[in-house]
Length: 106
Length: 460
Image (tube, rainbow over all chains, first blue to last red; front, side, top):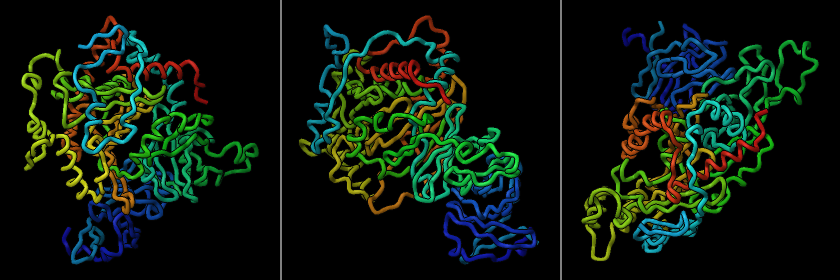
């Protein structure tokens, strides 16, 4: 993947640490997560029952589904607790000049 | 050794902890000057209590469903909808923050077919609870929200099928649960701790680091390695602790105090070798052992006074907390309160920990040891989001949790004997022998455990 595929999706200031921002893309809804370790992006729909993770909560680097409580690590999308079995797709993110850039989506 | 006609009256030679506290430049608060000990027996503790699956099963039926236990800190669940899952043996509890800021706790169980509602342990977010099996759901307060195909359940109502509530109470910034809905109030168990900790409010603390380690021993074997300072000489190669003070305040609460920044060479009189005894450490050596750099002792100053003052200044500046009124003892000493059955609270500043020892699931031979380093928090500062626990397996070293700093090798030493203890207990011909004074707190826990085994109601 080249840097050309990155696009600006937000200003860093618009997503306080501990908060998330849901954006629409060609690949569907993507959740930008501002953790104490930096910015990460994962699919917004839970792999278990398709609830919106944006209605859940970011705790540290874990995003918690509001429906059945499944937890995922936003750093790589991996699943941390049932009832989900599959991880969330994750996307590359970088920060430049106060902008949050999302990659991995054509 | 001081001999005595009556068991339990003998003490180590030399100055006592009370002597040290009375001589401190900044005097200790009243609770630390209280002393309460009485001889409670000297029979061996049967090894079955540590290794027998039947005894362990009885604890699961009689002890854990009837004991108050801290489950999380209040700052783990700051907002409505925040929740925390706490597991003990086969039981699991959801602690949730309500819309009105109250905290309630429920069994983590669907009232339809019994599915566990939230997997794992730790912080969760549950604006409503939804079972992943048939989709029954509940409001945050546990009342029924929706039952798909309700027409088939005319026999189901809020009264019969709300989430099953358990007792819940708060103290010192901790949220406690008790599976027994008719449990005696938490305050009845806390006893003197309510009064004592008014001087050392744990509410005004934050979790600096939380480490959760699996240990290769029964939960009692493990916690008993932390209930006396008698092991300090051999396990930690340390002179501190041979004259520690032990108090038993009630059937639920006990305490030890051992000084840091001074020690009693006389208390080591019959320990092997001459180390720390002949000759004793100089005050300069004691100060150096506390890693106090660039400070020499003026005439009449003691290492303890100087170390306490350096810590007041340096840590005070670092944390933004005014320690000027804190006693030398609170700044330095290892002061450990134990709350039955498995919780430890340290009001000190240099040694500010909280411990919890729980069975690892339903395994008699292993346990989960939680260590919180609970750092004083500036008065004008809100509690930050607590860190997730650093999880260590049996064979991992505490040094892998770098945040523990100087404590990490100490915990490796404390837990390094446990596999040997488990192995030895399983091949012993006799019970466990306890010192009348230094190990009396351990005996008190077993006596209270017997009370629970004899009188508590089974889980229902």
